[in-house]
Amino acid sequence: MDNDAKLRPLYLGKILYERTDEDHWLTTNQLIAILKDEYNISSHRQTIATEIELLKDFGMDIGCIKSRQNRYYLISREFDLAELKLIIDAVDASKFISNRESKKLSGKLAGLASNFKAEELKRNGSAEGRVRTTNEKTCLIIDAMNTAINTKKKVAFKYFTYDGNKKKVLRHDGEHYVFSPYELIWDGDRYYVLGWSDRNNDLRTFRVDRIFDVPAVLPAKAVKKPAGFSAAGYAGKNFSMFEGEVKEVTLLCADDTMDSMIDRFGEKVKTERADESHFRLTAETADSHVFYAWVFGFGGKVKIEAPEDMQTEYKKMLRKAMK
Image (cartoon, rainbow, N blue to C red; front, side, top):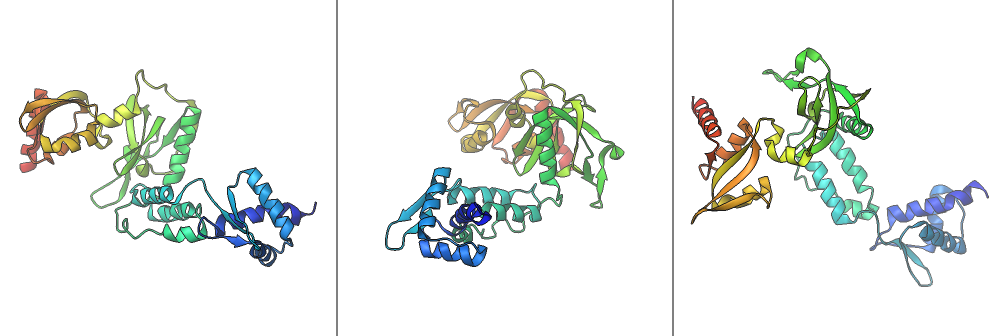
């Protein structure tokens, strides 16, 4: 069999994938012409019919409208248009992905639709102007972390923050963090890696977009996960992934804050009636300034009832802010 005969069904599948969908089709003669004009591959009517049957046996969902000129089109794909729109919107809205990476990923996702439908996937600029990371290596960093998680290895990386002059400054004088990654967590607008820090000898989270370069995957075995480890539980207790001592807190909340409480703690959170217009909520949370800022955001509709030390710390933070 010559190469043209071997390649013909592959190109035929490519043409149908890119140029047809449930609203657009190609006739037998059009397929023959495209194969000849663009790929210099000769074919005839019976060859097209035979090889489309071959593609269907392979798993491609190809429809045919029977007529003098049979019309062929791809019926279904791995992702439908609504699913692709959802994924592209998520990519476009992600602050931890740079503008360049976002456009590249969105383009690749649009390529999973036909050329006609790809036009409908062009977004309307709703995410334009969003504050984004300038770290162009985020995807490579995530890939390295995934490799380490899957192989249960440690990684080494440098971590940076910004100083008052907007300059990147490496933490701990540029010394490498040695880290056992357990989970990658998308929390709010940010992407974090959660794992065991050799430096702190404890669980820690790091923002993926603040890792300075692609981490080195080390030959050393990762530290085993602590007993009872739960990434979801950790994320639920640490506001914006700021660590702190986990405590049971009781909040007195106005009824119109229930949506926000369920968004934060989930529908199974423990609540009870306090009076006609308030409910009492009990949950575990990390004692951190981010939690207090969240409480403050309700403008007095949420009050910390217990524990007493968190009440005291909240008042201290408010007095300090007023100064």
